[in-house]
Length: 219
Image (cartoon, rainbow, N blue to C red; front, side, top):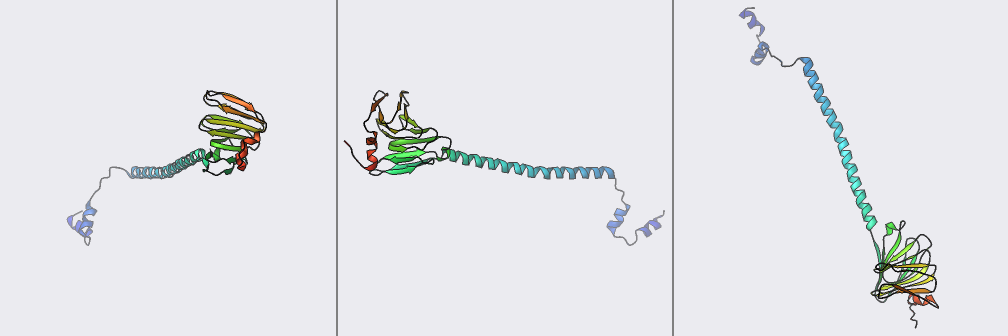
């Protein structure tokens, strides 16, 4: 082909088009290889898009578990407290229906959300208990624990004076430090001695121990 023919071939084309028309591009990959590479990239992108939602779901599950554990811990250690100030009494009804009369300058506390597993109260001061029937019921003070199952009794736990009086049923009393313990029957009372042991006595009428409930003073 002569120069005249080439001139006629590119007559009317823009300069850039003339240049591209004469160019011969050498590709480093064949058409099949290019398509294979493109397909691989698309596949990798799809995989990444699938993994991200799964990772986000795991984050959501982990956050939910952490919140649940936090709420559970708060409920497990949450304490409900009652305080009878100076010169007054306070009536308390526990979750199982047991009734407590708190004397002046006394306080009672318990874990409400553990109650189904353990009927247990902490006492400082004096209180009269009417315990509903059920499993073991513990009254814990600084020096001793009184345990009963469906009974009525009075506990005085002030400073060095610790006295438990049984009105009905049976009452077990155990000292923390000395391991001294007794089992009281109706109209029996026990006192904690200075040496850490319990001394029990029989009473003609154990109801005198709860005279304070009706604001009476007996001599």
